[in-house]
Length: 193
Length: 193
Image (cartoon, rainbow over all chains, first blue to last red; front, side, top):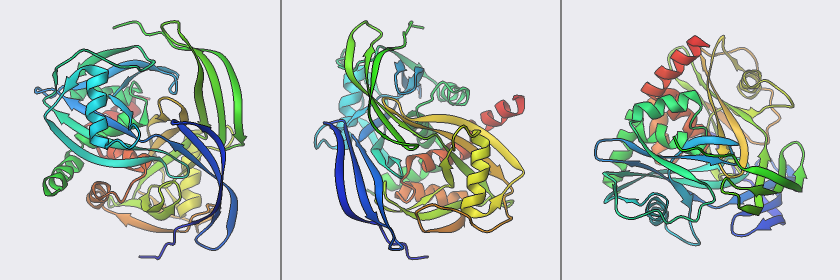
């Protein structure tokens, strides 16, 4: 394999900060080939957990919401930001319970993925919860109104193809968690962990 | 279905701009329930095309690169920003050719997905190209050094599960384009289009 050197951060200047949500900075970086670029941006957003929560009969818990970043009503998976220093799985369990009132005893970590390969923009931590059941009422401070639905995977695949699940993180989570070959490998690696 | 009203933008103030890449603004929005929030951020990044390019024997074209947003060397799919007013498929064809020297006569649009449901952060336009062949040399102004690899889908599924394809857009593109049920539905909808 070709050797590939990481870039080096020569200096970094904060441009804007809205803690804890957004930190925007501009870096001077030295590239692998030695060139120096003085306007490479870093956008730090909070890491977040996304949950593919299935009932005992295989239906997936979905939230129907208007989302301002999408500019439309869409189907979303339960998700939320990791709070200061919080473990990703703890955040997934907390968010599922707060947003929906549902809980599970069977959790699997399916991987983590950074939203933007140039700027960062936060990392998604993906979890599957099986056999979810309602144990409490909703206790969320989210700004969005929402409707909770339970949909069989087939209907969600159709929704993805029709553009009704237009958030990348939700569509990616469904595709990764229900992909026969990827999910088989994920099961092997989590049984080894 | 529960009626869900879109939010209304009452006012918007630009905070930072690095054209054409980044526009950060802070909005005052009126929520569905009438409450007014005066610090909702919008992060406009360029839309981008991601290409799942397969050779006649089914191997997928992958770029191995150090990516600063990930902070590591990773496997990436060919991808690039839509230039001013550019059609998404034209951008996909241009980026594949510029970055890799490869072209195809068989292109399919597999959907578009917005990177962040709160802030925006750009929309990914996903394409599949089949039977790709090399027709020119690489002609890219990307900052990254890279190595081009051809990998069977099985090896990419393993790479995703090992964390070696850690960019959300690339992992999502592989999972969506190779998901047996989602890709079957995508074929039906593109044959109707």
